Length: 89
Image 1 (spheres, one colour):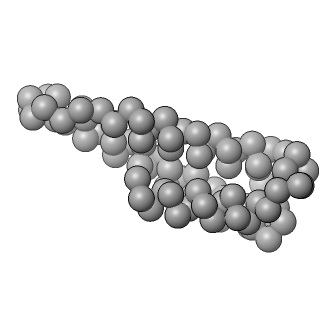
Image 2 (cartoon, one colour; image 1 turned 90 degrees about the vertical axis):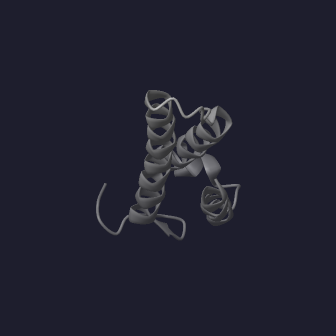
């Protein structure tokens, strides 16, 4: 995507940054489980959290691909809600 490209009032760099944060959180959760299972520490895989993160990533990717499909929504509010929830997971 071109630099400076934006969807509504949100820059593409910002969307990509959030997607990267989501990917890193997923990797962290999986790595934590993997390390725990190798060391027999008994931690469980947070599948609910991972599915939630994947859902958020899918929403952001679909907004990126077809912003006009979401013209009746306040995209800024959707992205803001995802960002807020991302910090809680």
